[in-house]
Image (cartoon, rainbow, N blue to C red):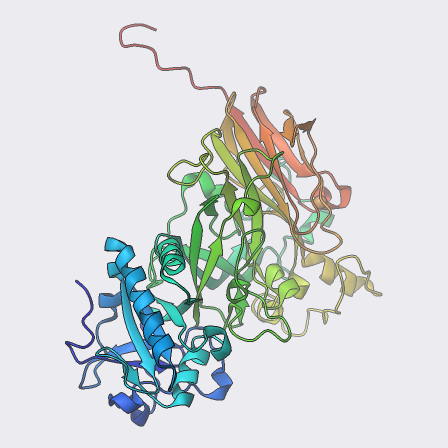
Length: 541
Ligand SMILES: [Cu+2]
């Protein structure tokens, strides 16, 4: 079923995102703004929303009723912007676009092509004032100049979220549209939720009670928070309604506080739709992959247009290409890892909990699910001191978990600075969570494998100058880029891929070898079970 805009007498209205409740677009506009007359089919977002990323189109019928959004789910709106007097170049571009859609066959049926302009343009076209046309562009986070006189915007599904500005000749348009429509799609929600750094408040590495020093990081006291904090984290969702959370597969149980693993094979394009359900603006900034400025997830001075910083309640679509240079290099194994994290207020955001990983597999080396063909098991581990003193939710946590007036004011310190008085020093230290994937004292679950398997460890660090980590495996060795070792080195935002073929069964330590760090809980246990015997033919043993 296609959507038949003209047949149903539907109109499009560009609405600024003014909050939403259950995943349906909000309709918080004055009635005059919603009048379904052609001349007022779209309206300029208020200047305060100058580039609200998810200003969205709402489909309306002639009576002004909103049409069921699900009709549009999983589809795209390709909006050609035609300014007055554009004339032949615009008609030529429209014809290139129509031909490009024709080239796509079935895939092309997922795209609805509509023109908006300052003059009536064709049967599907919508007419508005020049400022209204610019408003549509700005509302979708596209700089008017960037789109050009005949450019087109690809908008994503029912939210009308901006995907990419497109223009050019038919072959280039066909190729780009094909990549965008065939992209691997992920839905990620940014949610505020409680996180427990130590579900079992003991030193599980030693199977012993916590020492007095260790209790600082875990015990809830009148003047300290303990092990449970409100965080903002990335969660996987099943679709663009953001109603159903993805159930994390057992093999990823060890990810802990990390967001869902994004996967790509060299040559892929990823579309990552992110809904910000939290109270602060956040983003998703990825390392290594190729992105346009609109998918950078960070704001830089002097750059117009959308950058993927998402206001509370907003939804944004990031597009990441995965060329050769984003995948394994000549000396890398069949897959490598990149971190992703929020970069609205970078140092604060990652300490608030917004961290995750992307795994890129070499061309031709990926299974259908994206995992490398030559690997039996993968583990992603983030060695990071979550500095709760620098979380966006510090005050929220003080209010929730300490007695009023008891927590010392947190001075603005780097992790290594030493406060002058003992009480403040203890408070600051109690909020430094020396964690692996957000777990302290070997609480990290799920590091299970068998002898003889090809096990790949992706090791990442993030943080400040204290986040110089030396993850160390007891019991086995690993190879890293052709070098054999049992300790690797990671510094903030660097990553290492270490391959292991376990030959030594048992339960073993995996910990940061920096003394201060492992004493504060940067430890885990991994388990190597005997190899599975090949199943013997029936009737024999
Ligand atoms: Cu360390």
